[in-house]
Amino acid sequence: MATKKSMRKMKASALVFDVTLYPRSTIDGTHVSALVRALEGGEVLPPIHIDQNRRIIDGVHRWKAYQRRYGVAEAELVCEVHKYSSDSEAYIDALRRNSRHGKVITNSDLTFAIIKATEYDVTLEVIAKAIGVTVERVKTVTATKVLTIRGPGVVGEPKIPLKRSVRHLASLGGTITEEQGVVIGRAPGQSQDLLIRQVCDLMESDLIDWADESVATQLKRLLKLTTTIQARLQDVAI
Image: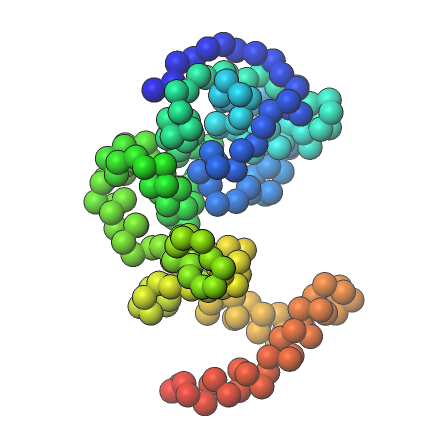
């Protein structure tokens, strides 16, 4: 395990965000905004944990908040520097720290973190201990909540978390195309029923912002899909 090296005050611009060491699937802009408000209110945030190469191990949201509050060039923050013997050791420590404080790790984040941990060739026992769950939970996630991307030009068999919005794919073998993987990667965690219902509710209640060009563009996409929707619904028993 890493040993604490020192406490240092550093420019935020000097730190490195290495996505390979980040155990979450995305950076939550809403959480960053909440931290910015805390800074504006005089709160002192915990130190950022970094490795000997200035890569962030824990504190990406805090790092982003400092930059947004004080400016990318001016932001300074306190860092706790750790020395690791390997990237796998650094990642497991990042996983351990991120799963125990700050923003809660979602089920999708948990699956993403486990997928990445297995790529570092560490045992399931080590992964489970880092996250604070049972080995059986880790086995369940790797067996049932992972999608495999396959297709022409895809190297190996990369995996992504099975989000709730595409949970039905698990019964189809869990294999998707590269294009589907991109869409799933940016999809929210809610069910398809909820997402579609929200659009319908906005339409029926006349709450659509018709003046928003982005909204209008997406509605035009939906309109073009009307024929496809009608054709597919003919095969569905309602």
